[in-house]
Every structure is written in structure tokens, then in C-alpha cells.
Image (cartoon, rainbow, N blue to C red; front, side):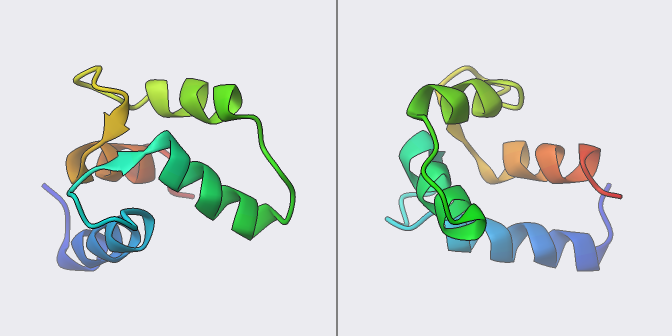
Length: 76
């Protein structure tokens, strides 16, 4: 599975993204964080399409496991 450092990174990132604390990351939550990071507005449809790539169960939200999959595949 994942090592503990990676697991801690996933948990910390998920907590930061899940601003309402309901256990999922919505496109709205991800969009707000990405806009904060890049300093410019993003189109909601762009964020939704991005999320869809890793939305394994198709609920239009990311679980912690789906975020972990995204981070695992995009590690340098």
C-alpha cells in the first residue's frame, strides 16, 4: 500500500481541501484552493473535468482514497 509519509501527506492535503469537513472534496472546494495557489480565477467546468479523471465512483466528489490516487499518479 502507501508508506506512512505519503499517507500523512494525503491526510493533510485532504483536510486542507475539505473545507466544510464533510469527508469529501467538491469541485467548489478544489477550485477555491487551486485559485488561491495559482492566483487567478478558474472555470468551474475545467475543475470538474479535472476531478472527473480521478473520481472513481462517479459521485462528482473526491474521497480521501481518490485524492490519494491522484497524488500517487502525479508524484514526481
